[in-house]
Image (spheres, rainbow, N blue to C red):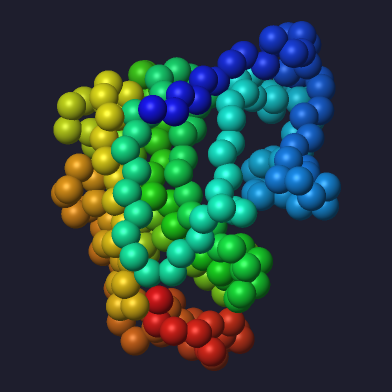
Length: 210
């Protein structure tokens, strides 16, 4: 079992840093000119009184150089963390980005959750699985290919659960503890599924259905 333990940012920075310091994560993947998700201050944030630098730091594990696949099954057994400011996520990102930058080449979110105990009905008792796709940002049609669900034992932080994605050349099936939670089947193609018609160029014209 691999344990990933979040820690307080105050271990490295003082409390004033949260509201006045700058945290820059550009190049954390080994290339100084790359950000894995710059939306919503994902790689560079300057703290202010109303937009704090996140006070929690955690790890990111990447298999970019070790693992890639197209079609098949992937299964992950995990116990989510418990605590505020935590957003555990297990994603599959493109290896070569053949159709262009995000979200054109897709993103498969096996699971995303939150660590909060007290966050209404979207705390650690809830999770989600999603396929992100669209011809370019901000056209992301993930709302058509997403599912939200709750843990059968009250919280995904209480015990280990199993997430699975079965990916074929016709669809994607997402499971939690062997229960089907999401079916992604675009019909003839994702372009037709989007309903964009001839408003934009189709980046997937030369690709397969899935």
